[in-house]
Amino acid sequence: MRILVAGSGGREHALAWACARRGAEIICAPGNGGTATIAENVDVAADDVENIVRLARERGVDLVVIGPDAAVAAGLADACAAAGIAAFGPTRAAGRIESSKEFAKQLMDSAGIPTARWRAGGAGQREALRAFVDELGGACAVKADGLALGKGVTVCDDAAQARAAIDACLLDGRFGDAGARVVVEERLTGREVSVLALSDGERLRVLVPACDHKRAHDGDRGPNTGGMGAYAPVGWLDGDALRTQAVEQVLQPCVDALSERGTPYRGCLYTGLILTASGLRVLEFNARFGDPEAQVLLPLLVDDAPTMFAACVHGELVAGDVAVVAGASVGVVAAAEGYPGSVRKGDAIEGVDEVEDDVLVFHAGTARDADGVLRTAGGRVLTVVSHKATLESARRHVYANLDRIRFAGSWYRSDIAAPAALTVPVR
Image 1 (cartoon, rainbow, N blue to C red):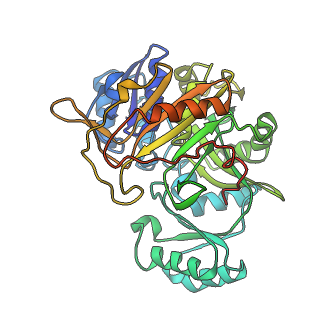
Image 2 (cartoon, rainbow, N blue to C red):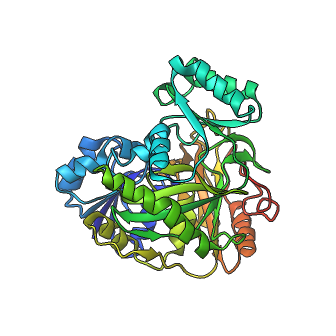
Image 3 (cartoon, rainbow, N blue to C red):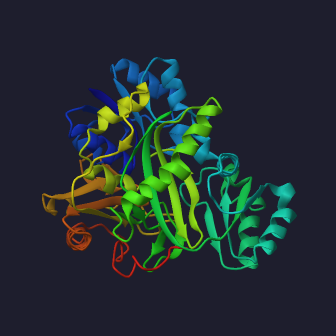
């Protein structure tokens, strides 16, 4: 099978790796310094729909695997379908479950999916949003409605902070068009967990739950990022029971609601859940694999990833749980200086070839210069992943190997999957 993976991050490297290990021939567009070792990189942006379709046609691609949210929102799946090319990933309309948080909230309410109380609006509704903040007692979450690279959420402790977050979006344009409307929702307290499932528009194959660490610094402090690390499975909960609950209360109702609207969802459906004292609630949906969740989940698969992806496209998915190997997987992100803000780039990366053979290094913000030297090229540079019999042994192993990789300004959280981090609510 010849597969084109659209994207350039750690998630896309993991997707390319998962497909290549099953014997598929891989093309990445545009790829990164890591995918170049297992695939042919072609310099076409993932959301350059016309040229991705042209590339798929020219190379006789059997399946396009859509990685990032921007490619979903650009309508890559729609364009592939129109060209008769199989594409694993939702259409633009189905992908609104992520590209518009307001749409997602409306769909959840109509489908009876449990979520936080919320209000949405633009600059004209600013006073109403501020009044809702007061109704909530000040503690809330302010979210840019559109895509903001995982950084569009401000968790607020009081009304002053919430008003400032609303104004930053609606008046100051912090997130551009993505923040022209905002969603304000009640702040929920509990443990967060991610449940991802593959869907063919009707049926679901559910992966084991995973947890990521969104905040930049140890102890879940600092600004939100795209994710600083992740682990799976989640030992502090009954994963089988949660999967059943997530399917019955969240995932299947979501897939059914989208199908009833004439926009069947085919691809990976990500739900971010919070387990509150009042029960499960949905924090967000993503219309693709999570990053860095993909980097820890895909190495656990027993089932053949390309076969499952193709089954989603052709409506042939067998419902149930995705089979995984025993043990636990931990991934830690090495970031560039300045992340999640403006970052330095172009620093030489050393030591990637010094990690142990059983350690995976998924590249994200990397590129090779004219001399073949691997250099930093983005905020989240690498995700280093270990799979071991226990979570603690995987954690120790990943950090021991992470220290072998060196580049100027490198930093990472030291508490990914640490025992203390497993007992502290994220929100």
